[in-house]
Image (cartoon, one colour):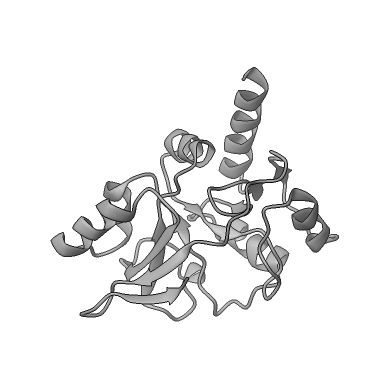
Length: 188
């Protein structure tokens, strides 16, 4: 347990310094960084070879943090309490509090509370949202296998890899759009 605590503390330090961490989640391995640090966000785009116009989803620790970033009405909040924490990313109308680079030209934000102890600990220790994008090159499949994740990146590497071995098979999160009158499933 002491070894895991040291890795978590190291991840917190690196994220605070503007670094990027590869970390397991409740779905696939992900790339974590401070959502307020534009240099860290640029590094994620570079590592993933991701188009700057494509938004990056965000991990939050609780609904209160989500409300700081997005407009959430009572009906939406009720839905969020049913699906969070879990493997569901929800698209909402965003508030203008995070760097625009995260969103491309979109006026929306993708938020998720993962059901994974390690991410929950990081979010609690940092007390701010983190990027929640999969650790893969854009267009290539996300993975639960650490060797596959590391193989994709070549020279472009994260500042820290939290290697917890291969995860149970999982697909990336379901994405649900709550910005319209009806719930719209964008990815299953």
